[in-house]
Length: 438
Ligand code: GDP
Ligand code: GDP
Image (cartoon, rainbow, N blue to C red; front, top):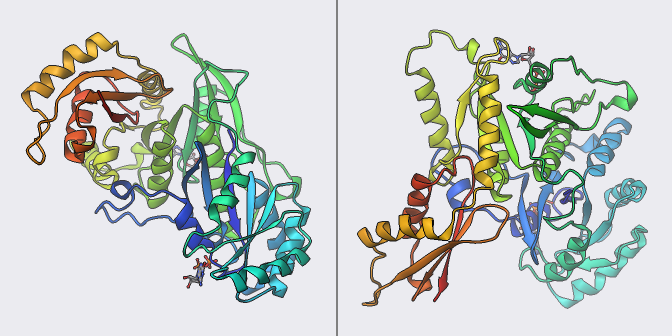
């Protein structure tokens, strides 16, 4: 699956306003009190049942006035080339500018669907003016929208999502779990793969400053087959830091979308960072299996018996309660400490993600829990949960059938989730529950 929507355009046209409108932020995840700064450059969106990742390129590129120098132009192009669909945003109030034309020249060369989005069309007059942007010479029709009010965005998204794949597209290697190794540059991803696969897979080539694509390796461990996706070698010989970041983030997102389990590698000497949080929040949205590998554990000096526990607590606080299901393992690729346990854990997470609990067992275990602690009555009405069944979805989700589904509040939903997790092993797996009328 490669569903990436990039919003691009010169500064101040309204990219981040549209981004915020398209992206769903689960408050509990993104706004927990941990103080992890939110990374607003990419997030999860959905429209008419299609899922995609939205990227605001303004966060990465277009930072300076000399942005159109040849070298940078090349890199913007490369970065945009990773997106599935590009929104080229312009501003109806300002009208067409020279910078818009520069942008159009770059975008015209990309073999990608590009939509011209004329923003700030707050009223019919401004909407009329948006037709001037046909002069940019892009193939797309011009969509006039108002990011501020949201008007016009539905029509735009209807078009955009036609380029996106459904979640369940046929994959020739269907059935073989895909595990992706994600994490910040230098966390130890390539070293990890080299240690597992036993050969030096270093990768830098000389072609126009880039390296190679993410590599998929078939791998067998403990008698089980899976595919490891490595985004590690994605590096560019670039002088512009932001672009490297942007480029590697895009690749990581593509690989994330394609995988069943994400191993997020964190450098122990740097600690858990905002970017780690962003990728995990995204993986949770896509309902991927997730685990955290705290690597370079050998470099942590003066370890005591509770050092790992402290570290774990700190990460868990940053993750917040909704993500507390994510297991954390401490590794050293250098000394080969726990690297096979890490793979074992990834395999277990994958099994948890495909776990199916028989309805009889589910009810035998959960109904007594519910009886002991029933949903609180609301407005004098008693809520009765009658039975529970796991839904036939790819990732674990459960329907609780009851008389008044709308009366069940979030704390009780959390209680049920915790109980489900305590009875059945869903470690590392996002679990959804739904209340349905019966
Ligand atoms: P970016 O630099 O392209 O990300 O632009 P921003 O999203 O930060 O928006 C720049 C300014 O335009 C902000 O003051 C927004 O409030 C404003 N803006 C964004 N969308 C609209 C819109 O649809 N109508 C109007 N009138 N203002 C908008
Ligand atoms: P990547 O960018 O995530 O692929 O990271 P690399 O695999 O290239 O590793 C970055 C650096 O960290 C290299 O110099 C590795 O030798 C080193 N490194 C990787 N894992 C460990 C580890 O567990 N302990 C120590 N001390 N160094 C490590």
